[in-house]
Image 1 (cartoon, rainbow, N blue to C red):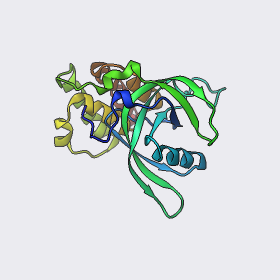
Image 2 (image 1 turned 90 degrees about the vertical axis):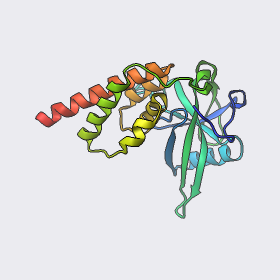
Image 3 (image 1 turned 135 degrees about the horizontal axis):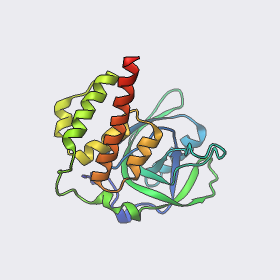
Image 4 (image 1 turned 135 degrees about the vertical axis):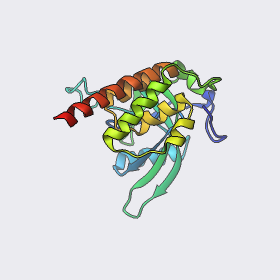
Length: 218
């Protein structure tokens, strides 16, 4: 995975990180997630991030704990604000580029409304490793399912571009952008190796395609 000169190295990742819990939303390393920020606490978060390391973590609420509305999954991904625009009605439109995944080591007290954690980056150090080969098993199956998925959901895409993207980067981009369920996105996010992420995305697409075919028959 390639990073621009503006991106931090692994040893430069921050020791504390604001988090932005959002259902059905993840950012993966190297992918871009557009966000529309309007809640005061998250406007504070973005202002503080812009004045320091420009980073915050995307987290998903954990639906398995309905009695704990503040509960989030343990694993998220830290991203860097790479595009920023203020609007006339008080919103911030930004693009968050994924840098590295992390586990929450500890949640800290915060005085600015948003949540703050100590991230453990170490389990995901491989997010910084340059992939020496783009070969993964089941790539053809992935492309076949993608075509079925895009046909069934009537989404449009540039297949020439899709086919030119290395599988590991393609999986990260699709996980960020496709309207998959929160559990499916989280499973891919937590998969360590590129092959695990490919296989997990394949499983998610198989389920989605199967469900759309069943719906079409009824």
